[in-house]
Length: 299
Length: 334
Image (cartoon, rainbow over all chains, first blue to last red; front, side, top):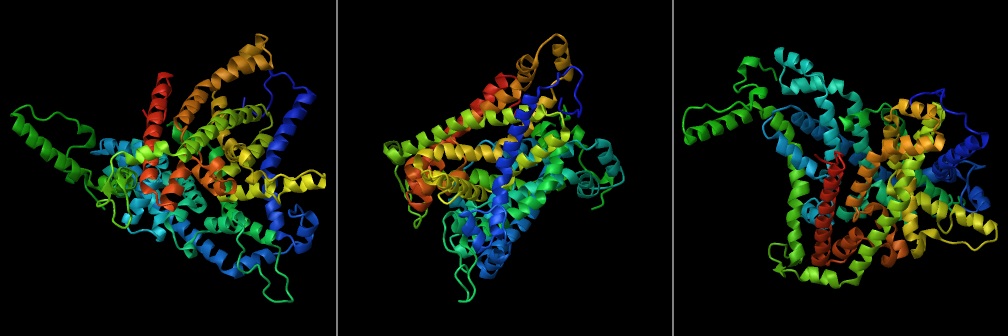
């Protein structure tokens, strides 16, 4: 029923009212998702007058400008937080991807000594989390408090991603691997020349999943980074938007230049936190519709 | 990294389970096994080295921290460390049971779970049914790509968006004021906190949840629909007799797994908003542990709460999987 794009002969034509209702529901659902994003972007571009006229939130700014963005990027606090988030996301994703690939590959081959119990050790972590207090004590004991490594190492690997990738590796035809071995290729060489090139799509999805979760994370930073000067963007966003602390730079820089409205500045910070997600989303979306992930989960 | 096949000292991996030599006593067999384990480790050394970093991670960050729960039995003073802190037996657990804030957090957690079961759980099923009944694949794709999006948005941004929509200075109150009505700040009203967090979860993850139900709907044999239509079954009869039985197994599985997580509500979401409504309405078990332990320094009691919660949650998940198996489902693990 879903796969076809035309009406099967046995399916009766829906009534006009039924179709209208269905479309109306879908339109409301879609709007409910799109509207908040649209108004946030619009407000971030709005001028003082727009914000005043609309009583706070703007849907179509009549005098669009980038004052809010230049304000926060001058302020330094946001710029620094963006750099922290970008750095943690890049380094974290690379480390996570490398360790996940290595472990999934090691566990994908039948008969590697100890692989069964090791897989169970990893899988079991899906069922329980140690909890906040022991995690905190461990990170403290390792001397990682106030260190950016505390944002990466405790969440380095995800057992779910590991299982998906291992399942995908196991689906690669054994003949390919056997013939490479005949040609004298070792395990690492088989990984880099045969397995990885065949897994580009699933690797992209897993890398994006890791990247999105590093970018979005805030709690580990709240827990482990005492120095708010080290905070990533999400925590800074929490401070200035959710808790309403005044952003440095939103006070007038000079008497003849009015600062951009606070609301625009707050929304500009939200937009900056959103942009990377919106940029990678089409790629994520493409792979879901291809069923890369669901196929791998079932396998 | 070039290796010639003949260099492989140990038997091929497929022969790994070959029986030990029949001759010789127990001692000889033991020696053979030891040598063979060494040989196997040698044979698989590259693969084991690849596995090692991941294994170290899982052990260090998922198993070693469990030792930290020793503070649940101590009067833990961070300055002294948990080796030298005084052992107090089950005192912390007694304090926990006598603490009305703990019971409040437990009740709040269960209430939120219940609200989510009733309102969030069926939402993706309804949306998937609606989407699957849309004939035009263009419309379907478009709606799908829009509704998946919030799943990837951080909780901080989502709470900010809700604040802009429903908060004191938000769109809703702007409208209410225009209409001459009394404004209401949904974000800070304690009585509305639980419905609010449920609505946020629906907004964020309803679309994402449809993926799995859409896949299940896709797997229903189309000839069943055709046959029942030929037999005169109407739209609703087909829904009742073909569609719903078709997605029943996955629905039961997901429901059982959700029940297994009854004590776990979205911690990141709630910690962002607890302060706006106060602990009475907004405290759940995980935030109790955070605010009493990390912030308040009451390490022993909050570790006790974390430990009890962890054990009960693990038991719930394990029994949920047992039940799922009994229903003939695969569950989370085999």
